[in-house]
Image 1: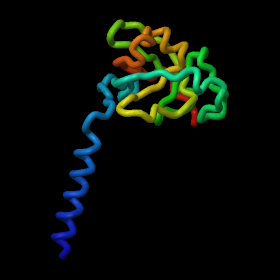
Image 2 (image 1 turned 120 degrees about the horizontal axis):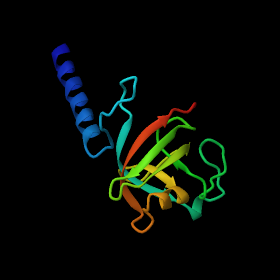
Image 3 (image 1 turned 180 degrees about the vertical axis):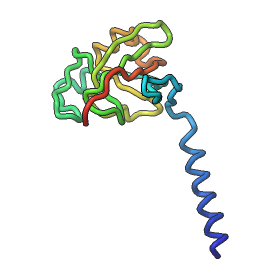
Image 4 (image 1 turned 60 degrees about the horizontal axis):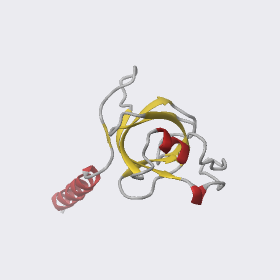
Length: 137
């Protein structure tokens, strides 16, 4: 019976790992001076009018004219450089909200930040995110 239990456990674990690897944002392996991965690549989107004036996840009031962004896991007040891979334009933003919660997107930029990287016409962009300053939770 113990052998069967181990096979079931390994099978479930394998399925879990297989599902996690498909289509998710990925670290590219560039390192900081401490050697940890510091660059994420994926799809960025932006949010604006509907959320302007609402409370963000860290308790601030969302200002679509500020250089801020939402990320699922980075600590609040982290500073990241977001670079649009299609045109090379970049912007430094501060993480003050959680998201995005749609599809495979890895970051939601404020309207001001989206304008800086020229992604307004398309609504999304292929980007890299470089962590340049860790915040505190």
